[in-house]
Length: 274
Image (cartoon, rainbow, N blue to C red; front, side, top):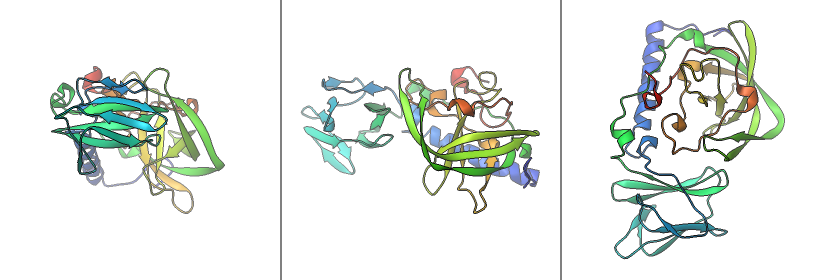
C-alpha cells in the first residue's frame, strides 16, 4: 500500500469488489431489508392503527406499547404475544423486530422519537429492484489513511434525511489521507463493533453521478500505528438513497470533500440513476 493507492492484481481486486457488491445488494434486497419498508410511522401518546401493521401503537415515558385486537398476534423474540405488549424504552438507534405473518414490524428509536416501520416482502420497491449502478472498481481509489483519535469522543450533531430530525454521534477521531496529491480528512463515527469506523461524506460527484445527500464508507479497525485502508470503491448508499421511509444521518459539514471520488455506488435507479 501507499498513501496514493494500493497495489493489487487487477483481476483479484475486481473479483473481491464483486463479492462485496453482491453481498451489499443481497442485504438491501432481503425480504425484510430496507426496500421492503412500506411505512414510517411516528408514535406519540395517542394510540394509532396503521394499514400495514396490526394493533394500536403509542409511546410515552415507559416506551412503546401495542394493543392487539382479538385474532391479532405478533411474535417477539420467538414468543407469540397477544393483547397488550410493552416493548419498553428503546435505545437510540436500537430496535426490535416483531414478526407478523411474512412481514416484520420494526419498532425502533431514531432521533429521540419512537417509530414503527413495517417491512413486507411484496413491497413494490423491493420486487422491482434491479440492482444499483456502480463505478467499475479501480485500485487508485483505495488509499491508506491515518486515524487521529480525539482526546475524548466529541458529541457531533448531524441532520437527517427526514426534515427536522437530528442524530448525535460520539465521534472518536478523524482520518487524514491524501487523494490525487490533496491532503484531506474525514470525521469518523463509531462503526458496527470491534473498533470499526463509519465515514459519512459527500464529494464533487454528489448530486451528479452519486446520491446527493450522503454516502457511507465502513472502515476496519485502525492498525497499531493508526493506519487504515479507505477503499472508496466500497462507498455505499444509505437507505435514504432508495426510499423516503428512511431516517439516515447526513454528513457533518467538514466531511463535504472538494474532490470528485468517482468510485463506489451511484445514484440508484429508483432516484433516476442509470
